[in-house]
Image (tube, rainbow, N blue to C red; front, side, top):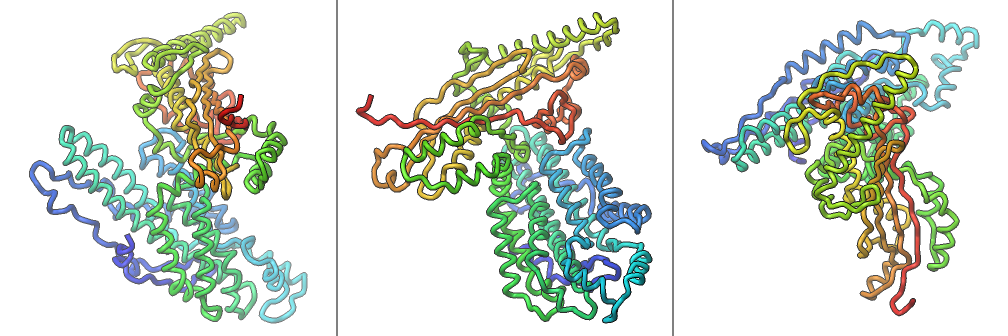
Length: 626
């Protein structure tokens, strides 16, 4: 991947523009390379992949970027800050553009797409530095001096009143940033559609389908490289701008461009990582990598050169190496970010105490555990929104279910019967809830809304039927089966035990003891509740390496409990006879994962976590002891 950077030639940074305009490389300095071509070996009559169809060209992206830029510049208020204008005028346009490009009918976006959009908007705001990001000491100096002369307070107030127009982003910088985002967005959408088209076009010919998918992946990688280069240029531009703005606080002090590079560069580099990965926060490995980049820049940059010179000679290759590392380790970094997001909900003081606790004996461990036992009895654990695009599909969840023992309302059932029995229970609860609502409406003298006519719908078995609530029932059943998968619940439990107790010299292992059955309870009050239990053994690493029959210091029993509430009556009525349940509509995946209190349509605020983990430590039984 590193060789691709050579295709773009050397980078160049232009001089800062007046009034806070962004410093950006010219379009001529970053020519667009030719995309990779299919291998000649694949060009056989039967196995040749379908050429990737670019549904939207680079020229179309450039035109759209120009149109958005022109509209934004016409509507912006120069008296408002650049950040206020971006969020007030451009953020909604970008959100709608993203939703349309990915063909989503709902206002909600997939988590990683939304994270990448938020990071892009944040990076766009950083193109014009805010006064709050600059040193307060230099601001006070500037407030008292104008051209090395003392300014009376009255004259200073008049000057501040006259400075009405605030710095805004330059037109060319905004165009280039929007062009980068639109091109990358369209490339992801086109690659996804081409992969689906290849699967349909080459049914029964897996070799040709694999070749077509490989070509689509190569095109997407190429588009990512182009987008990453533009993101690096944007980060360089933002860094130079904030350095120049910092030096402008004191007249004739260009040398101030190079003070505090760590405080200025770190947030910009981390924000670049967020946009490349599409995550809400970077993990510990990425944070360490950014810190190493900043240290290297501080070591190599010249304090007596201009910020743009330092950026071009020193910072450019460092940022390129960072982006290459992010792409190489993207899957692991995204998974780590999701895991750390899950761990972040554990109270910080509790997590810090247990992670840094030194245990001197098994008795000491149980003494510490008992002191925090009430707090470990119900830890709120959110689901993995970042991983919803890569989580197991329904088939994998069903495979996991067939390997388990299952209890449905305290009665053990065969895995082959779970789907049918669970579907009957959920359907009956939806009918009861709807009938209760009708009874209350009749008692209050209200007229119940007429039920829509039944339409033929597709069931899990593939047969068509006219059973009411079919699609809503199917969705809740599959949601339950995913929750009952030990692959997900057991993995999350392990990561939490490992994080809290797996310090230096400690090894956490899955217990060889057969896990208890997974419990599923369905009732009218709580909806569906899934309880999955696991056990983990905690060893002294030295003892385990020296003796094969080493005993664990302790055994940690975990219980992951997840609640899936029934939808409100208006949702039941709406989807009572819908032919296809539009998950991306009112019951989109993100809303259901959030499980908002009392309303599936609630937003991100006020979300109630409905997934909890309880921990309980017990002493291991040694052989020969009763």
